[in-house]
Structures are given as structure tokens and as C-alpha cells.
Length: 181
Image (tube, rainbow, N blue to C red; front, top):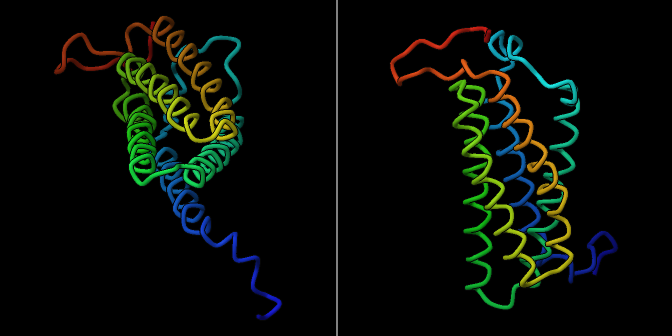
């Protein structure tokens, strides 16, 4: 065997690691593309305790690394194909809610709808923690930063809705004001 070939016991995790990393890049890319910090966003009222915009990128990078690591550990420790299928389903549901939040808040300019979504996102994270925790305690612990960040984001979203009550149109056809009063 040649010296450059790594320990063969690591190879079974290469595919889930690659898939997880690709997933994280796609989800982060979609979220970034959907996040439009246009004049509409800049004109919103923010709480004094809102983190600076530059913090969100590094925070999500760390969170996505933890999510991928949790997924790989749970995949490795899942005893059956059915358990792995359940994990994939939980991650997919979570992904939909994750991406939908950026779409609702930034693209559709509906912080109120995004607030409903972030509650569903948080519930999907809890389900994910329970699901991966059945196979790996370490994987469940790796999802704690995600749950904490989304809990904070949900409170921030709720506060934004309260501070900007006129950002949502009164009816589906009504015009949205560019600046809240």
C-alpha cells in the first residue's frame, strides 16, 4: 500500500462528509443570495442589542460546520438504513425552513411571515436534536449552537415585527411602505 493513502477506516465517512459539505455550501449560498440588505432593510427599526451585520456570516459558518459534523456523526452511528433515512428527512425539513426564512424576511419583505417560519425552524431543530441524539449524543450537542442562534434570531425577528408593524401589507395586494413610521 502506498504511503499517501490514508487509513481505510476513514473512507466510509468520506461520502457523507462530502455530501454534508456540499449541502452546507448550497444552503449558505441560497441564504446569501436571498439575503438582500437593500434600502428596505436598512430603513427598518432595529433593537439596540442587534448584532452587527458582519457577525452573521461568521456565526452561520460555525453553525454550518457544526451541523455537518453532527450529520456525519449521526450517519456513522445510525444502526439501520431506516434510521439514516429518518435523519436525511429531518435535515431536509430543517433545510426548507432555514432557506424559507431568508426568502420570507428579505425577498418577500415579510418579517411577520418569517416569524412564523422561524418558530417552525426552531421546532425542526429540536426534532433534529432528538433525531440525531438517538444515534449520537455528540451529534446532538453539536446542534446546540444552531438551536441557541435560532432562538436568539427568533427573538430578534419578533422584536423587529413589533418595532416595524407597518412592514407587512394590510392585504395581499396592498403596497408595502419602504420605511416604517
